[in-house]
Length: 360
Image (cartoon, helix red, strand yellow):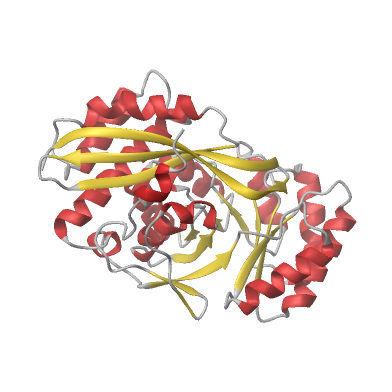
């Protein structure tokens, strides 16, 4: 089964209303839908995206430029593709846009391989669990009032979620504390609560705020520092009892290896787009397991659920339904956990009729 073509299609996905975090306002996304075609008639699909549809053309061009590393080669030799692509991007660098380009094609190749084998990816990758605990991450934004936070949190509980994440980062830490207290009081002690600072704090601010947050029994305090400050993050992790989660902005096994060496986080959060696709997500997951470190996911719930299902140290799926409307199928939840689909490949296929109305 050889790759005959790599196709890209840009679409814009808009939110019903803008959301706010420490990273700024988010109103829309520039999605690049990737399709790998093979001479066996089997196709693989994947997507990557940009915030607010900025630099989408650059990201798409990277995928298009890497197509020649895949076309003409065996679609099932994914490690071979990865090695060729890694060498190919050496001059541009092994972080950022080049790695996202590799991820896009890597994921589509894995989807095609799963379809060819008639297996869901999590079984093809070894299989560890057919359900993954999920937390709702599609709300509790910094732009919400306290009353809105409380109503939204209660709504998530009513939907069956047993875990959820809220955002921090207001100028006055006392306001952050008041918001966390309100949500914790609303959901009670039996529901897991995570808090994400979206890289908006300094080391001193993170330690002070983290200590004030400890009475609320957070499951984790996420990304308190800028992604590049791994040494500072390690000091924050050492200073707090609350676990630190980070890694969504880290690239490949080499970035995560450094995080593990420094003990920068108690939970690693690889992102399928930034880490290097399925291939590298699994390498990072197994490397974390060798250090007795848990992993969660960042975004992409429909596809991340498959790689998490293949890892015994995977503890949570982030449920962020930004792109769920692009698929024909929907995630199923049971008792607060996401069921890993038993359909071949990702188990999710693009809804081409719906997408046709989004195309530029």
